[in-house]
Image 1 (cartoon, rainbow, N blue to C red):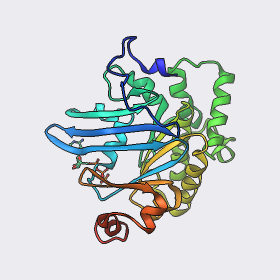
Image 2: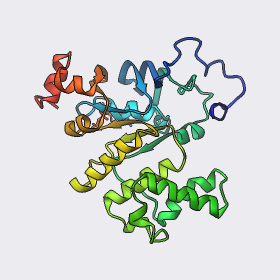
Image 3: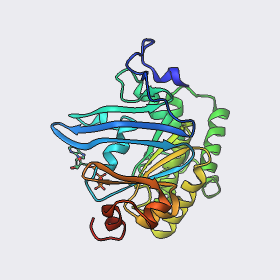
Image 4: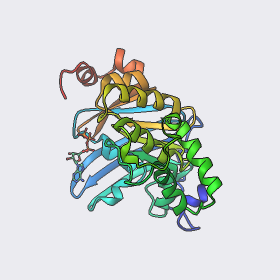
Length: 273
Ligand SMILES: Nc1ncnc2c1ncn2[C@@H]1O[C@H](COP(=O)(O)OP(=O)(O)OP(=O)(O)O)[C@@H](O)[C@H]1O
């Protein structure tokens, strides 16, 4: 899997010569700074992200949660003037290196956005589009991946009889689970979720939360959420951001019952933000 992430054979810059990951971790962030032009949005944060766990990123609007999340699969590359310094180690490589193959990286580290964004095509085509692009063309193989992905996204039973109907005919919650299925189809190891259920009604929200909890047996999940109850219900670890700083990062239970930093306590109890 790893060689596909490397653009070239010589990868001195991509291979860090220190700071290996602990075996329970999937990512290690070292002194990460992210800038938009001159403005620094993330101020030198360091944290380890556990495998097969849910890590919630919380904090008031504009504190850098989404900027950090997007750096993990290099989505910020699409923003003119955005740049990152420091390291994000994954599989022994620095994701931020210029020698990383970003297309391959985004298959392994998939992303789901706040607003469900299915293509205006059939449910089936939404899942097979990127697979075909990556060279999988046999119908029986595609059929198998479509079913597997929809099952994992807890959507199969609801859509199995209308796979060739438009994805836009689904409810918002179903569309979001389809977007999760589309990410699953690429066989990622990490899933980045940017407020994935904030645009949904309470019932759909509950289904997406249940799904996320179920997915952690197969994937490492990092989720941005404004919803404190959601963070405390579903995540194992919580990171509290404020003005681009990582203020506190600990087990979710500790953050929500006995935080070490006063600002964390003030934020989770709703005194600001
Ligand atoms: N494309 C961009 N160009 C310039 N500045 C940006 C861009 N995106 C974000 N910023 C700035 O970076 C800082 C962090 O923004 P970011 O969106 O990461 O915060 P956030 O915590 O995710 O906020 P929210 O909860 O509102 O989504 C903010 O000051 C924001 O204005």
